[in-house]
Amino acid sequence: MGKITVETCEIEGLKVITPTVFGDERGYFMETYNYNDYKAAGIDMEFVQDNQSSSKKGVLRGLHFQKGEHAQTKLVRAVCGRILDVALDIRAGSPTFGQYVAAELSDENNLQMYIPKGFAHGFAVLSEIAHVAYKTDAYYAPESEGAINATDPDLAIDWQLGGTVCLQSGKDRAASSWEHYCQAPAFHYEGARK
Image (tube, rainbow, N blue to C red; front, side, top):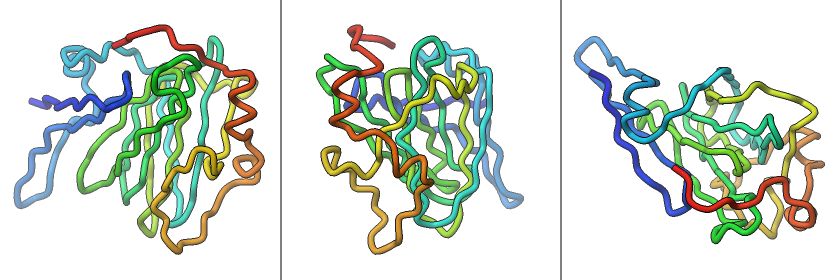
């Protein structure tokens, strides 16, 4: 019970995961995380913290990361609603440095995004409301947090918000530009990883 399907993305390390959903006239059941299934799929990660947020349509969170010993791998899913989830490669020297993968995660498709260390993460809310849950393999450490402005034109990320007003926190609006991040990158490419 509870096997997963793992799709490797065009950027090394990123994965989109589809859990098996068992449904009938009562509703559905799925395992959102099973260590043994993930390990068998090549994702051998010990998660230590669960986070959840609630956001309304047009909210744009990110692009966030933690650096140094507090760098985080994340497993992200939309519990309710629909988001565009984005992972940006911030590993200087990577062949895909500055490129991103975007995936729509929703309570209908049940997809999850696996984001290893060395990526900045953010999402835009496409539905009227979205509840987003994610696991991390390191605890939150405010002194190690970093951010890149998600609307930086050098990144040219299409957040698929259309005419919706983009709502960002003051902290996210004031985040570093991509050009500024590139002057002193927090991560360096170390070659192929699982």
